[in-house]
Length: 108
Picture 1 (tube, rainbow, N blue to C red):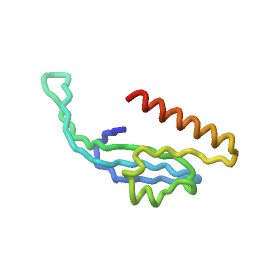
Picture 2: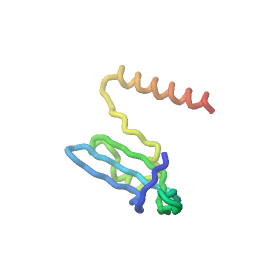
Picture 3: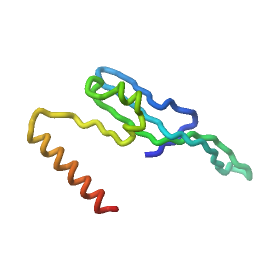
Picture 4: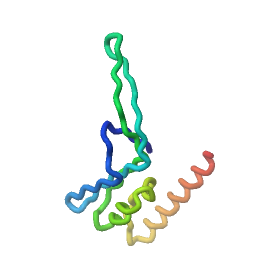
């Protein structure tokens, strides 16, 4: 996903609270300006910073935080999925993942 900000962002920002980590990844920065019409005849021009963006939320002890900070671009499509000891739940998650992959392949 692409995200636009009015100020420059760090490649990785991690906020930890109550055992949960909130990770914000901003990679491949591009800068630009955009004009918006004013109420009168003028226009307002604003500068922006645009990034490939991802948010990851999960237990701080279950996320590879050090690796994310070292290699943020590798995690642009990462989604935290809780692991379960129940083999039925694991099998169902694998089937859902496979189904999504097949559907993405058919959409191409």
